Amino acid sequence: IDYVLKWWERLSGNLPLCKITNDVIAEFRQACIDFPYLPKTIASGWTMLRVIIRRMAKAETGNARGLGIIKLVPWMKPVKDVQRIPRRVSQDDLSLWYIACHIAEFPKQAGFPPAVYWRTLIVLAYFTGLRKADLFAVRLSDMDFTRQELDFTAEKTEKEMILPLHDCVIEHV
Image (cartoon, rainbow, N blue to C red; front, side, top):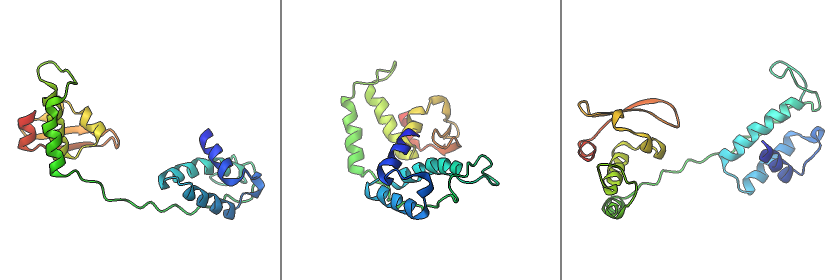
């Protein structure tokens, strides 16, 4: 939370608490956009600042520990987060990566060369669309070869998922 307070001090001019208004927050928001911070960074920083500012507001339902230093908790318009289309790897690049695996020296797993390890990861990533953390967390015990399914829990969302395994993935594993 220290970095958020320093961020506030630098971009808002470090006003006294009693001078924090919706207009001040709007100027702070614009300064964050101009800096430029990402919309998600601004949103998470504002969430932390709002907790502190709420504590300075008057005590009321939902804010029983309010100190009454400021009259009203200011509001900030959310920053629009434009979602970009994910970058897709071309078939040519994928083929080049697959071919280049023959020069890999790591990891040195018992029983198979590093090229097999990396080629298997590339094929598994291509056919399942797994995130990097999930891809490296997959174990053979997560795969059901008779039903051709991958059963695992996603690292980021902690959701249990069952994905079909293409014949090409089965061949590489």
